[in-house]
Length: 445
Image (cartoon, rainbow, N blue to C red; front, side, top):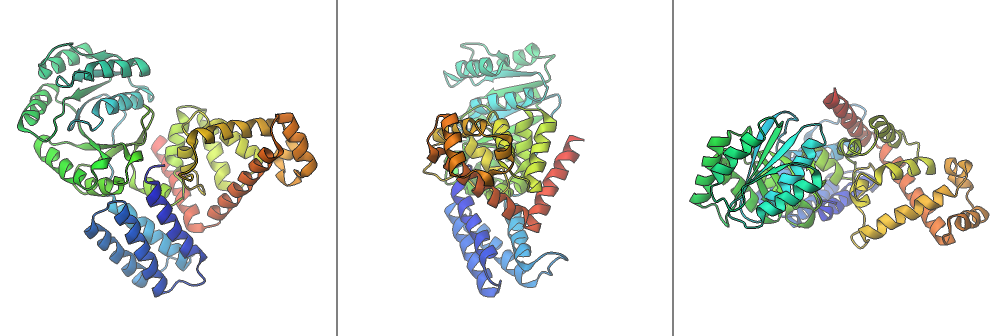
């Protein structure tokens, strides 16, 4: 999961609030210090952290509790809202005909991001063409060609050509009848004048609707300075943060860029071409806090499974009706959506998996759970409580696994059921999830 360390720390803060006998000034100061520590470890700017801490304390002390909410729920709401505000405003990329130019320094992931963006848009019914205008990195054209083959998107380039403007001009002609043109430009080791000049000349020819800066999240707080510099130089109107899954500085990059006037549109969450997510501060913080992110989950599920079935599954989770049958149906659908570890982080009640668990082992375990549940009767799937020793033995023999594997499944089911029940019992979290579902419906309409 993205920023798993930060997520673990923040979720422990919520547990401390929920588990306390009473909420007083001492507890508020204690959880504020815990939040400070978590954010500083995630490389968030010290001044930003101090400002957030002060707001949390002031609001917890002086703000009137809304009708129907408890003090604990109110403080959780304050933490959620202030963390969301810390990340700034989100940008948006419309799913319509347009031209997009990607800019940035060397090693930021522009070419891979071009492929991810092309896949994202083509999955939404648009025709896409990729233009290889990086004339300085020798392997850039070949890399983009390979990516284009993988996602079945055409690529235009001129091998050996050193004039990026010429490539852009010819590429736009080639893709004249294509919905979306994505231009992959050259980078430099620093924001040098020749890079700016080249980008400006290409931009003058392309007249792109979107000028998107691609930034590696591992640069941390420096991402803000780079975003501001590019924004002032070439008027970027969006940012994509890459490699957010593999850095401890992601919190610093997110918060720094979020306040530059160049909004974050997408975040890269892995090496695969499907690992690109729209960035929404509310949904991102919701996932960090263990409240899930049903909007993103539904979005990813729609690419792989029937839309009505996806919505039905999400509503089952929220209803609290959670038997082995529901667990089986969810696992079946989620298998094609992405790595289990990432998907579980989007479900309410499921924080990120432990770092010492191998993701590949998780996938193998998922397949084993499927086989075990295939060996159960309808009665057992609908009422797991009846599965005692004799049934465990029968199921294990039918599935060709050890009895301990069956018990492990039942243990995981009980943990999941309790987690879902606990989170669905929290009115504040339930309201947040309902809001996400409502926002998704409005977005679709």
